[in-house]
Length: 543
Image (cartoon, rainbow, N blue to C red; front, side, top):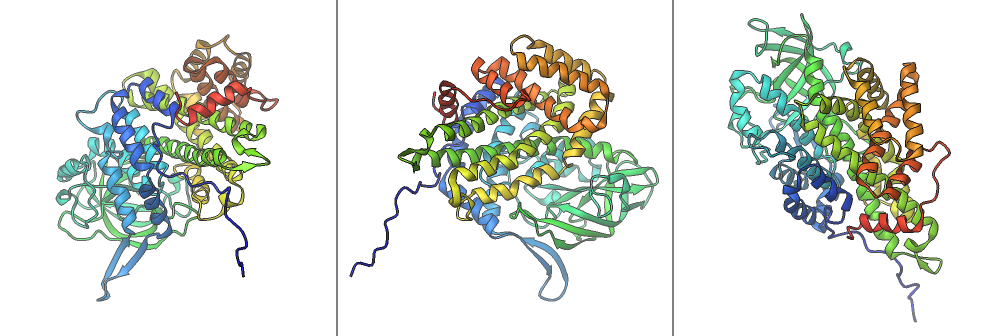
């Protein structure tokens, strides 16, 4: 008897063993344009490695086997340790070896190192996002520690700037590599850190570099296994920033007790904890009352990484959808040849083109800390980028899932993990409204901010009718000063700056299409077939 019920055919193969860098024309061009072309060979090699089936499997394993909290030793002694799957450690080794956590802060850092580091970040984020949490916090904390780290911890700077991953539990000055976490939010406040109740009391005199005892809690203590955390606590002088090592210089564990690990929607590979401080010892960074200012220095870097991470996951979701569309037959021809599908995929590719152009322009601006104009661009566009890119990411990945149909909704595919991962970047380091309020505050109070916006928009005036109209409307809306328009202003600021960048560096048809897609209130219009083909070719790395 013949028990065969069917043959399996017309099922696309998964996207394995591709080069994540060489297949992305917009990314390659942006790296060269923003003065990091010296890193092309490294990025190409990294793109090949990270696009391999082996690397993608590590990302899957790290999320399928989330960390465990080990509360006690077998003897009953408190342990408060976090155990990770080996895949986590392998991924961390790769990130640290590629200096994604400190490339910009090296003494011999080259021009464009921040851009090269952003590109490396984008490539790694397409494989696994949870491991980027300790990486981005370490990256953001390092310049703060380079400026304010107490003298008795000066030996930490060498392992902090190394390319070695060291997960051992020991004092930082005895380790080959270090990671830094952060603890800001508390149960009653969230983003309103001024409502924090954790207190810090000086042990032997107040002031920068002095030791204090901390009592209180943190509702989100990011990456509790980090070697140290930057935390906020109330002092006599106001909310202050403290350096809180996990292991004290004498080898004793600091009095930080992990209550539990968060059971999160996504970001499953990464540990986020709730902790209590039982007279934990922390060292004051800077002066009392300057905590928010110091944390915001760190937060500027982590906010930008949120935008980079969401963009990277959008790129990966699109790549999976595009690869599927080339293989899948539907109604007599490949899915990629169906007119409606070509429009969907072309608009997705166009979205990535504009984001890439502006994000890497912003990476360049953020590195120029002595240029007042670049400082204004960085201060305005970092929160705007975090708001707009992270907001776009969730429906973008959902669109990619629709391209695959039912198989894209099943856990055997990587898209469900990307979809669950997306909201964290919108929430962490300040939700959307907080970012929009930050944009408004900067536009109103930062010297030269409105002049910089007006000048930048004026530079490309006359090239596109929709851009000119949207720019006038933006400046008029800005003059009203109404906080209720905050989301509109932040979104339009990002889209206008991206349009200005596209008008300068892209083909005229592509720049015009971006303006129609993001600035035309009447809605999106069709992308002509020639531009469709150009966008899809560029998305596959075709020259």
